[in-house]
Image (cartoon, rainbow, N blue to C red; front, side, top):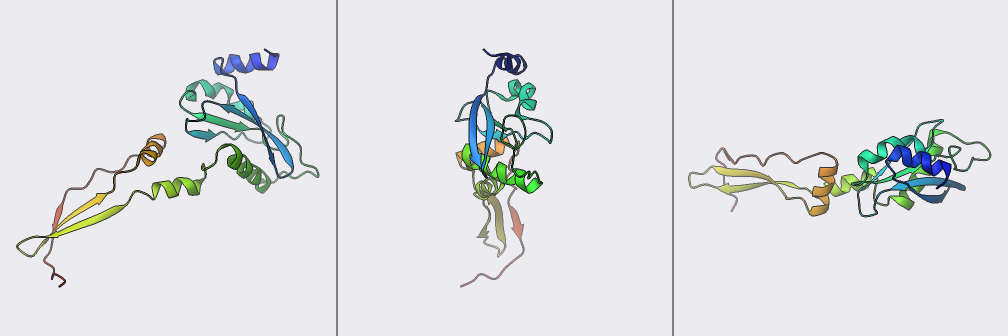
Length: 173
């Protein structure tokens, strides 16, 4: 074990990351990856002047249970430096897009929203014998992947509302 690995192991409870290299926008970015591929993925992004190992002390709290990807941003840690220098937020964002595509496909805000859009709310309206309507608002039960996503986001669907009676309506014939 190298001296650097020993320092990492001391901070992560013995959990050593795999190193993945991602080529993006003409740069070679180093990414540290902890956890199993089948676990949900979270991407940990350090701030300016930092590097991927800034997350080491957090790792034992999240692994196992999560697959964590911590990239060294351009010009940080062991990643390439941009030449000519280009270190604007849009540069970092574009690099992160490449890291997400390579190491966390499907982990985009749009993908999360599209997954959650599978939960539908609908009103079931049943006529009663006295001319009123029994209205039951219901949402569809989420599929397994959606239920897992909701749990990981610490979200839950509201309780199914009780049925209600509406005013009299004329039936369409």
